[in-house]
Amino acid sequence: MKSLRLPRHWSQEQLAQLSNLNVRTIQRVEKGEGAGLETLKSLASVFEISVDELKAVIERGNQPRSEDVFNSENSKAMHERAKAKVTTIKYFYAFTAFLGAVDLCCTLLQQSVCHLDKATVCRSSGLNQKQSTQYK
Image 1 (cartoon, rainbow, N blue to C red):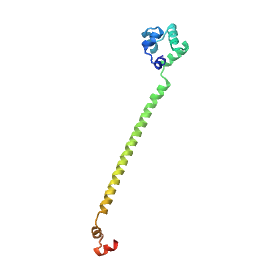
Image 2 (image 1 turned 30 degrees about the vertical axis):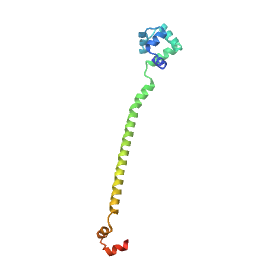
Image 3 (image 1 turned 90 degrees about the horizontal axis):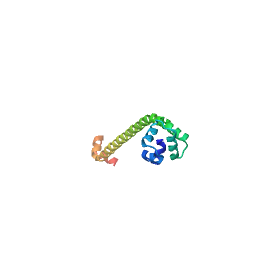
Image 4 (image 1 turned 90 degrees about the vertical axis):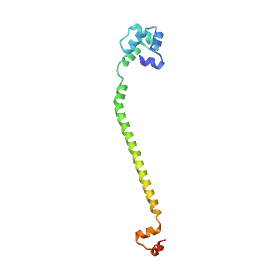
């Protein structure tokens, strides 16, 4: 019955006033403790449904909905998939940072090689000053 009351934004007290019932009666019906025919008639008229429809709603409210069971079973699987996705993203960004560091090292190494003067290059390669002028 709570599923009929809440979408209308009614409190238990408001439903009790509208149906001319005691708040405690509303609480008992919502807990599934049973209700007399007059109570069901009063509630059905407030919700503008038949007594049989109200009984069906009350019975459904006392059983775990298959949707809730489905959600609780799938919530663990969804949680595990989310954790795996987060881990994958973490590894991706760590690898991206590693590649950035490698690129920076290569750039710095390349710049330092380019800044060597020709004499240093010639000395290290075994060429003398005269031979190095050929390669200018």
